[in-house]
Image (cartoon, rainbow, N blue to C red; front, top):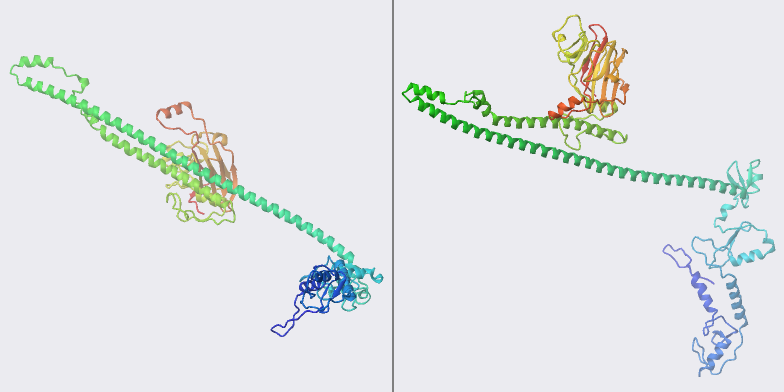
Length: 607
């Protein structure tokens, strides 16, 4: 069977894939055109067409004309039909071959074709390494049927048979050289690879497969671990998202409650001021009514007196004067102070309203300062919690709450001490009237040194330390955080820290935290600048070496609360003022030993 080879534009000939069409056409030629089945005793008519003997005889018996069913050629006499033995044998051979290769399929592009089949080629089932040929199912049976081929090695069909043959000796690769890591034939082992370690190719393949299985298993384990890591990351991300959402909701709720609380306080204060104003107006109205009544009575008395003065009889004047009643309790002595107090009742309410606003402004300013510092500290703690996040200057996203408390330019904190310096620094001034008599405080309250022997005037007054050479700061702190720095290069023995407001300054022994005394004594001449940091909320007092930016010592778990005496609580409640249980802590500085040239200096906090 032949197929056409059409010419292309470059005058090359390419085979046309007509395997399926040719096979189908050939099978149709082996079918009877009357019964459409395989030929049974095929006969040929004089015109050259083939039919089953029974089919053509039956066809002529049912028709008046004797003609060929295909070409319609008529015959004058019914031909004498003879069985075409050659055609019959050919059809039987083809049918037998088709039955034996019924599992065969034509080779598709990319599949290994049979090397024995003529065109069209069937798909190869096995490849013989000895014969270096591939066979379809039909030809494979023929290959196995040969006794000499019984011991040939068959493998799954491969197309690159040339890669399995030694180019030098034209023999199939049977061994693997470990030294050169190449496949070799038996002759190569005696030639170029003599004395090299070689193993059978099958063993090396098995070992390589086992190694690849182990590698694949390890990769699979690694994939599973990575997959679990991905799931863990997703779970953490989801938890973080939910936690952040909850945090934002909680913060929103806190701010909403704060706003509502402030609105309630505002409403209560406004209502109270209105009540006070109404009460003042009612009192003023009553005073006006009373004053009008007293004026009317005074006018009546004055009229009586004027009428009495018009009389000519002095005796009658004297007797009438004794009968007149001038009650002192009604103010008829004409006390100008009493009248002045009544006239000032209305301006007093105006002054009260002004004082209310001043108190509110002061309280709001304090809350604003404390809240702003706490929020800035919290924001930077959140930013510094992630090292990969860039810290933007404060106020870049929105306008600061108050320019007095938040600087326009903010240096991003690089460590904990810098964040403390930026967010919690306060201005500390020493109170000269609390200093030990052997110490002297400078006029600006920033320097402290040992007295040179001359007694200053302020040393005679004040509630000062009697036995400890210390001095307190002017201002105390009862909430939040605060930090200050002191230069100590000129002292060989100094003391820094904080003490509670009610600290007994006449103690003779060295006090400690139990007495409300949280201090640190220094004897190190290498220290230049010391920072003191107090966190009221956490109950911590920490001391830092500012030059090395390291923590020197820290008090933790400090109790900054005290029990307020019942009498003090009662008096404050009677005055309408809330008494806090938190200690007010005052900065404390001291020089335990030294010369007049020795001194301490409170310096501005820089970062």
